Length: 499
Image (cartoon, rainbow, N blue to C red; front, side, top):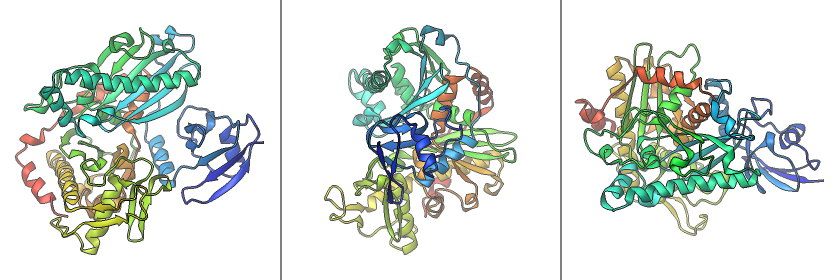
């Protein structure tokens, strides 16, 4: 009889018994352990993700217990985000199109290509269920933390675009082949693939020259929806697999924002809302009954902790939260560095203590975790340069929001909701976002984290052709504001520099 060691977010542990071959979600439920599964365990929502020692991250409803294992339960925050995401997402019937006829066991793949992270969603069309989610770091980080650095690599190195394209495809294909091997499938069974991502990442994907994105007037080679087949891209898929790249708006408002906004379903009473996706770029949209405005701010990579002295991605060992009582790390592991949400928390606490002044001055390095407690044996510190990185990033986003509000003739207090998408947006504490001036205090009770909305949109586009009309309606309404040419942006930016 297999025994499962269950570890909660607080670190408490218990042992439970299971029958060999029993469904993991059933085992947990029977033992009074609540796992968020709004589809009732039918495998359609992809929300019952947990970590196991044997298989890594799995869906509890689709996992069979075969041996002793260790289970790490999701945090209350993660469960809350998944709940919000489920409640605020449009639902569409599964109608993927003719490509499902290419295989007797048709599977689809939705890919969200972020500057830092790539997320892949594998969908079984026959069972109409999401069977696996894979998340990996974008290997292009070797050529720079932000899109401009990578575009410069293409400019400065012969064959640079080819290198970035190959590295991206190699990483995606590796994940596909691992999935196929684990599930006893063949490449021919991947019959449809959808992609979202920022405009630059999609240029790298399709091996289109991105250089024009880096220079005024910042015009990309394409923004409209792109169609290819598996063989065109060299994907580990059926050669005739239908490949759809969702449309973008501009050089810096990409398909990730289009997909996320199209997937979002606000509650009926929410008429005016902000949609904010914070990564290496701050991509923003303001939706009101009369307008749909969007813009992008050059926030830099601070929110994803790149260019931070002890910065690291939001992975195991990263300090993701900080209060006067101390730090919290992902997976309760010994601290290895500081991710974006932790950075915001540390600065917020030091502002309250007066250690950081309102103009951003930190006189000396601040030790967050001493070397004796660190998983690397080196102290984790916040430097004056780190504060300035965050200061520049938050000022750019706050100024961008203000320009959107001014352009629409809307006061911040008239905003009904603020939807935060993306990894950083999901895990920041609203108190820290407000204390540092990233978000206005009037949003305090209106902030709703909605998970990886871009990936959700890519998955809906994979599952249902009906989603296409929703995307097109959105594109017809969206009005892009180029902040660099807005006469008020520089003034707003300077004003938002203060904490």
